[in-house]
Length: 327
Image (cartoon, rainbow, N blue to C red; front, side, top):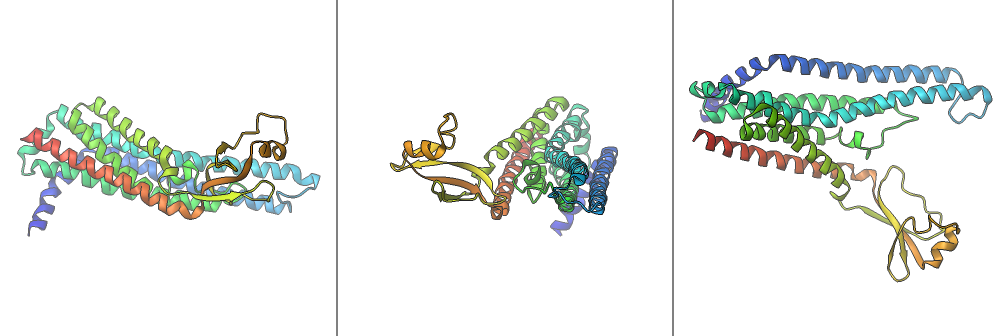
């Protein structure tokens, strides 16, 4: 009975929230639909370009003079299509910060400026239900929307294929795929609601929500390589070592016979042959720290856990602020 009562308590605030922001929701849905259609159109266009190029009988490795221009045109067109998906991925990475700004300003702080929040609290809905609705309803909508966009983007990149395949550790790929986008949206939503309750002024709250969410996204992007232990390969000069295909290179360099670590470009500023320069520095072997493709999901899940933990902390703080304001 208590669960049913809680659902009924949330029904009113949820309906009001959807009604008040219905235009924004319809606009956001329309933008998402256009993005999905655009990504599908990119894949269809890529198939057409690939078919036209295949019809010439040429390949990218052809050495025939007659194939030079068709190969160049094909590469240029596919590069343009690849860039469109890259820009879409970057936009998807920035979207959670926009969600945080909207939650901070129009959804929470504006109600305080207009005193609508007091009217809401005098109705049958308690303050906790008011806040829960502003966390739960947008969370469902945003997670569903971002998950769809991320899935379509991943599919589009797979359909684009060569000669510009998606590299899993690129910023526009990693940050816009897997579980990170949805977790980032939840984190930004919670931070935005907290900023709106704390500042209670639309413009400052929007700026704070956008700034904090953006800083967290950038900070995690910088620290991403350190969220999971790297794999280390060692090699000696001239042994024909080949760097692992598709790996995210974190660091590499040289180690002397005394164990001193030297930078990778220790011989870059000299005219001497590296095979001569490196032994002069006492180099014994080289090392390569990297994340292989198998580290994709460990990195995804660790970053997702951090984002969800930040979201939980922000939600807890928001209820504490609400209790102080209401009490």
